Every structure is written in structure tokens, then in C-alpha cells.
Image (cartoon, rainbow, N blue to C red; front, side, top):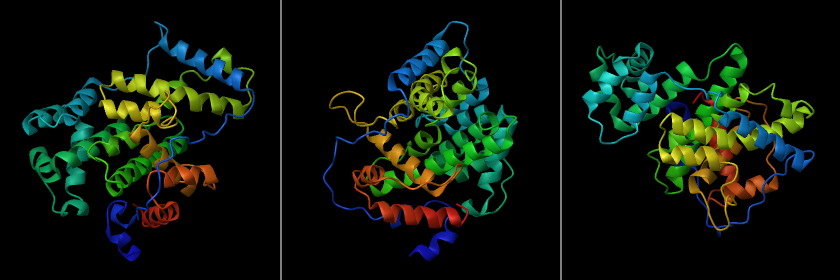
Amino acid sequence: MLSSLAKRARVPDADIKPIEIAEDGGLTRTRAAGDPEAIRQAAAALIQAAEAPGFRLPMLPDTATEAMALAGDPNTPMNRLERAIMTDAVLAARMLAVASSPAFAGAPVRSLAAALQRLGTGAIRDVLYQSVMECHVFRGEDERAARAQREHAIAVARLTKAVCKVAGIDQSQAFVCGLLHDIGHLALRMLVKHPALAKLTPEQTKSVHDIAHTTLGARMGAKWKLPELALEAARRHHRYADWEPGVYSQIGHVVAVADLVADHLGVGTSPRELTEVELERIAALGLDPQNLIEVARQAFAAGI
């Protein structure tokens, strides 16, 4: 079954075996390193700084924001979406390239209208969001860091969609939820010299970023007019079970699992072993952890 992976242009979700397991709502979060109170205060200071009147959260070009908003609305007429994409030459070129790729029959298309028709609504949405991120977000002076961020985000996006499918969860917005779960780190780039971080160790600073990026990501997403589910994923992928007593975020859990697997395999980062608690988090979603990891490993090794 796994030998067919190289022929497929996505994570082979059907090969991820579900298991029967009781839902565990009391999952333990990883504790931040160092002084928890100092870390909490520093995170609060960064969020407060980002809310100050003079601070501008990173924004997308108007054309990209409009195109993403239209793509996220299933009632948008295709000709209206075409007009919006045509205003951004880079996005239009990306649509033509993807529609002409082997994944979509391979025959070249000569017009944007023909490309959109071939892709279909669901693929248009996913390709558009990925293209916007590649063209306008996953960029910077540090090319290696930008490439790593892009690879990790796309891996999490594909795994999020795969996990949703096998777990019987609506996958229509899964790709964008995984793709944009860490956008809050863009705002944190603008706060690297904030006084609240001055006396913290690198490990403590990472813990601060882990806390603050979820709130900032949700606020950035709201300004970008992202779907509500994507905002929830950005806000809840580290705290899907204990945001409020009794409140559970399913999409937060799915993205958290996809994030763990991508980290374990070293996609866009250094590979690391998963803890028993993290493996339990995967199993709590009704998946066999080792099977999910192996399928993802085979898929990414095949260049997916």
C-alpha cells in the first residue's frame, strides 16, 4: 500500500489507520522552561505592545486579501474570483502553473479562466492561500529561515487535511488552518528587541514566543479576513483542551497533531522524538500514532 506513495501528489490520508480509543479531555501541556511567571509577563508585554496604537501588524496587499476572502466564500462566482486574481500577476501565474502541472492532467492551460475551471473550487482555495503565503509572507532576508518556515507550514497544512479526512472531520478548510497556524510569529519578528525579552535566555524567549504567537496570529488573521475556523486554529493549536473549562477545539487538536508529526520528521526544522504525552495526543484523536508517522515519513520522502 505504501509503495504507491511516490505516485500521489498529497499525503495519502486513506492509509492512516484510525483506532478505537476513549477521548481524553485532560491532556497535559508541555511546561514552559524557566520562571513561568516571568515568561507569562513577557508574553503579555509583547501582546500589549502589538496592540499599541503605533504598532502595525503585518498586512497583506489588498489584492491578496480580497482574493483570499473571495476564495473562502463558497458562493463567490468564478468570474468574480478570476477578476480578483488577475490583479495580482504573481498569483495568476501560480494558478496557471499549478493547473498545468501533472497533478491536474498536465496539459498546459492558456488562460486564467481555464486554469480555475480545471482546478475546481476546493483546489483553487488551497492553491491560492499557499501562493499568497509564498509570495507575500514566507520571504525575508534570511532565505534559509523563510524556506524552512514555508516547508513546515505546507507540511502541517497537508497533514491537517489528511488527519481530518481519516478522522471523519470536515476538511474543506483544513489546509488553510494548517498553513496559517503559526502566522503570529510574523508579528514577533517585529518585537525581537522589546525590553521584556532583554533578560531572558534563548530558551525562555522561545517559550514566550510559543505563548504569544497564538494570540497575535488570531488577531492578524482577523485583519486578513481569514475564515473563523482558521482564526480558531491559530489561537487554539497549543491549547485545544484547556482554553476554558470544558471547551474543546477540534481543529486546534487536529493542527496540533499535524504540527507534532511535522516536527518529529524534521520538516522545516530539526527532527525530534515525540514524548509519551505527545503520542497520547495523537491517539486521543482516534489515530494510530506510529502508523500516522510512518505514512507521513514515506510521503515526505517521496517529495510530497
